Length: 119
Length: 106
Image 1 (cartoon, each protein chain N blue to C red):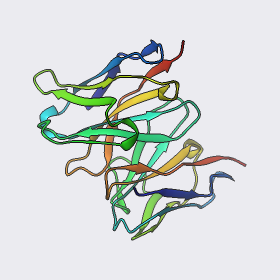
Image 2: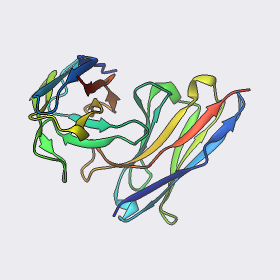
Image 3: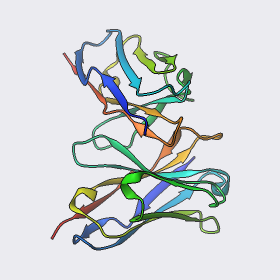
Image 4: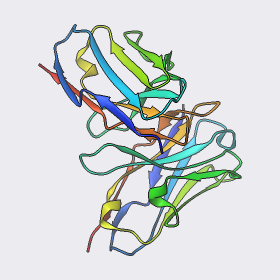
């Protein structure tokens, strides 16, 4: 059974940094692209960033370019999202998601971790 | 960027109703269109990928159709567990979600 468990969320001041983690199990982690998606309170879903199985290819939404960095450690079966220069509008639940074999859709999701940016 | 729109933004329906949700892309995305269901406080769940392929484990009352710019999600007979918000997502160029359609009880 695929399991994705996010951690690292919490309260951070504007301008601060946070690193989210997503521990994966139940599948061959290095064989699948992974992504981060967020959802602001009461709002819709926003795709942020994706990384190939090897980690050699990364794509980002314009909204987070230069501030958020996706990475992965295949030896630890863990996906990361480094978030810098956080703003109030980054307050959201952050989900990690596993792409289907062949990519192009998100077949499995974690439960999400809440990030609150506030002074 | 590819923009996605959905209609309606919300709808009220009864158990047993046939429900149709429409998604439109700002440019052609071939069949690179997915549908997700999200219930309050829960992560989204993939229902349909590649416009019309049913994800494993998803009931057959869910179906998808369309290509190019116009797509449809149909629930043939609405069940109590189907009351949720539904999102379309394009995967032709990066990923973009639609704004969602909330389905609630009439």
